[in-house]
Image 1 (cartoon, rainbow, N blue to C red):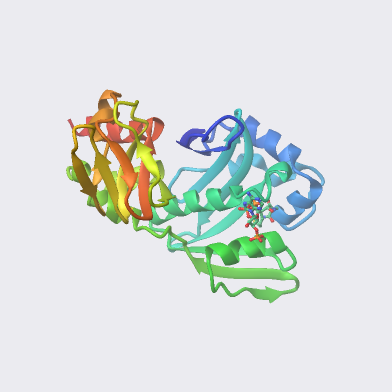
Image 2 (cartoon, protein in one colour):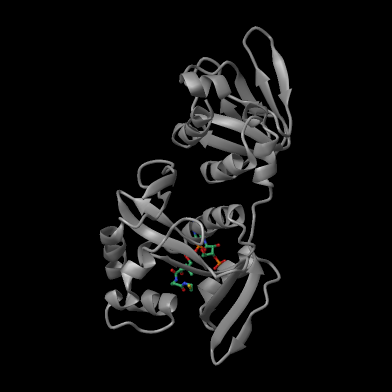
Length: 284
Ligand SMILES: CC(C)(COP(=O)(O)OP(=O)(O)OC[C@H]1O[C@@H](n2cnc3c(N)ncnc32)[C@H](O)[C@@H]1OP(=O)(O)O)[C@@H](O)C(=O)NCCC(=O)NCCS
């Protein structure tokens, strides 16, 4: 597994890309699923999870075939994947979450992360096939893709929907970030997986002067204000960033940053920022 999004804390689920070497973890995941969940995922009751042929599900090369997994303590608790239909911009989509982890927002997170990769790889539509009475899956898709229309035939619901993207055009936001100006479009696309998009309510503090810097911030919408103890005050607007030098040096924050208005912000923690460092050091 290759981490995409570190867990927010202990007991929280992190996100990672599945790798072909994750066979054992994937097998353990399938063996823990209830028969109902297996039935919903594979549209048929399997006598044994091995009939799902986990080895086939490991065939991910991160372009035509990708899978994002939810991980806690090294164990997989959810998988969202796409397989591109050869020669098209449409990919088949599937998702499954461990029974104990359902209804906590995990599928939503997995599918958002998967959509970011899909868009970066030129996949623009997802095709889904689910049972017509699979309320959780139908609701999930209606939420991610408002207006989706399912064609129902013999109890099976099918739909092709545009790949959902977050409110921000993350590519454009990263593309307009001053510190990344030297990156090619392909390099910017490779970084899309390593940013989180957060909504920040007005007056929320995002950094404290003199305290360890934990994240690189890029304003997508709204405004932040950077304040220093010596009276300095600087407005950060769409495309402005904060924390670059301190993230490189792992030094203390140069200012206190507070949301001036409700804002949408791209954030990268140290784990994610390593991807930026890797891209920039390859350029040297
Ligand atoms: C369909 C499936 C993937 C959904 O996974 P999930 O992680 O439970 O999905 P989410 O938590 O993101 O969203 C499901 C619901 O939980 C709600 N929810 C999200 N966070 C929540 C929380 N913290 N507390 C309570 N409910 C929450 C969501 O609002 C959503 O509600 P809705 O159904 O009214 O829209 C899961 O039920 C599953 O694995 N089913 C079997 C396999 C399957 O059917 N796959 C689809 C065909 S490939």
